[in-house]
Image 1 (tube, rainbow, N blue to C red):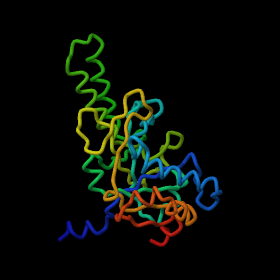
Image 2 (cartoon, rainbow, N blue to C red):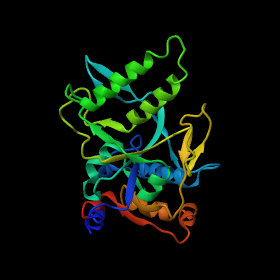
Image 3 (tube, rainbow, N blue to C red):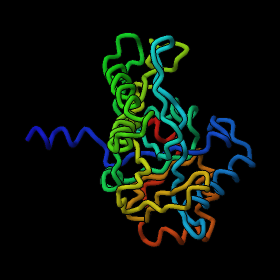
Length: 256
């Protein structure tokens, strides 16, 4: 009974936000911004030979200045949030105004998982212990005598990629990212991810996560005009077939 009650507190979708380089304020969109958002949606749904969400390289790091720095390297990933739609305004100003809500089951099926938020302060025991472990593993490498080095290093790196600091390094005590509830799908070379399409190591990004109309549960537009433009596009309209998701706007989300 308890598990059923907890399930009702969670939505069945996780939202990927895009468009931060187009415009981040839905209240001041120009006609050109609307056109660019429609083109972004077209590219996600219809790009040839492979549509989907880019797995972009994340070069962030978990850092306590003066003590340690754990870099993500250039690991490709696709990020989602589990935030309530009623608080999307703040989130879109950080990541963009077009949201695609894919089913939670889809993300899990592709080796996705929620990130674990760490404090990123001098009292952050989780990050510190992983940093300590990484330094121990690196000592196996210089002579190249330990065949386990690469395996151990990659396994620990995978754990690190599912960590995220709650704040930026400038003010490690503001915890500005705590309300995101982020999930990630990572590009895993050793894993047969069902919807991952590898485009080549020389590509940037090197992979995409593909999805179909059955997987898309919610589509959040910047404003009504952009939604109307998208639905008047025959190619976009045709992509859905009869599997239309809930289609809303950022302002409408404030009432959820």
